[in-house]
Length: 195
Ligand SMILES: Cc1cc2nc3c(=O)[nH]c(=O)nc-3n(C[C@H](O)[C@H](O)[C@H](O)COP(=O)(O)O)c2cc1C
View 1 (cartoon, rainbow, N blue to C red):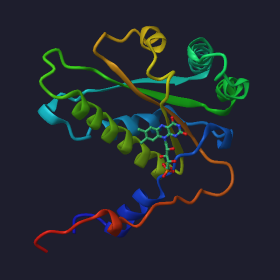
View 2: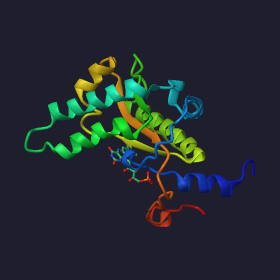
View 3: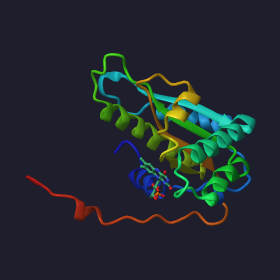
View 4: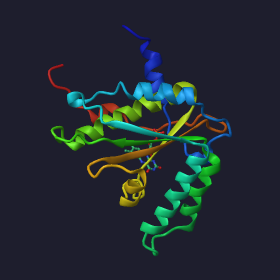
């Protein structure tokens, strides 16, 4: 055994999505984010394309991003589906969250690797970020949805036509107890052959 497996299993099991509304005021530090991104960069990558890219936000730029996010939500949501509560929930993140990482996918010019696989590589990078968060006692909330995939956000970020936004990761320490996760039994999702 190269590593302490029970500790690795525990780290993976205890990784948690924690919403910004549940973050404590304790700030996330730049050196911690650097460790997260270093781990992210070790994600597997088909054809060594390393498609993951990051935009890291704190302070005023994070507040501005949340403002833009809320305005895009308002602009793209049909009036009958628009929820004032959700709009305000996005704006509230300006106070709740001290740091966030926007993960985007840099599409290779040749498109030799299927986009799905490039997206998978970015998802692995996000998992690595989340695990480093857990090690620090932080939660990581991977947010997606219509704003994330909108043309408006794409343009705001200045991405190329083939690039994709993979998600916005809100980072923060939880208030109170570390939340418990919930999963179905892995054995029920597995078929064995030749064992
Ligand atoms: C690709 C992907 C996109 C996600 N997008 C959202 C999202 O937009 N909103 C949200 O509340 N949670 C989102 N999540 C987080 C899930 O809600 C979360 O992983 C799930 O509730 C399980 O909780 P856990 O991560 O603490 O185990 C996303 C997760 C993944 C893998």
